[in-house]
Image (cartoon, rainbow, N blue to C red; front, side, top):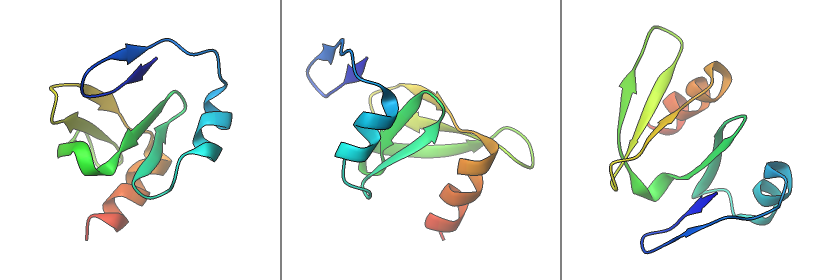
Length: 77
């Protein structure tokens, strides 16, 4: 599922294929099943010492894997 400001689209692409097509930045794969636009993040919420949750401006909440949490922490400095 791809979420935009106006619509949602159901696509039949592998997430790896989509990840390769999107520019990085601003798009970053934050979890095995989630890619986010860094420009639309409202805030990061720490769940524990190793993981975050991304709160999007549209109200969406996206989990972030431990590995990607380290990358997001580095990018946000």
